[in-house]
Length: 51
Image: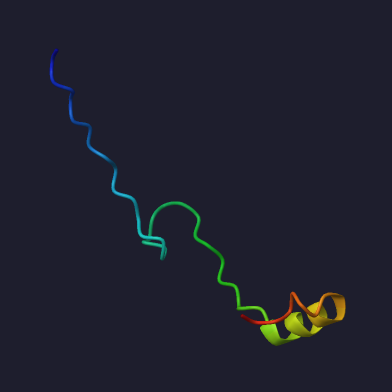
């Protein structure tokens, strides 16, 4: 059997937005976790506990 030809892999940009030609991820602020936990406690107190 003949040897398999080696294919070159394209270099993938880093997840931090390596300046590629494609669209970049939007810059979004982190949501307020305190407010979310308060709302969760009203629905299900057991699910709102931080482990």
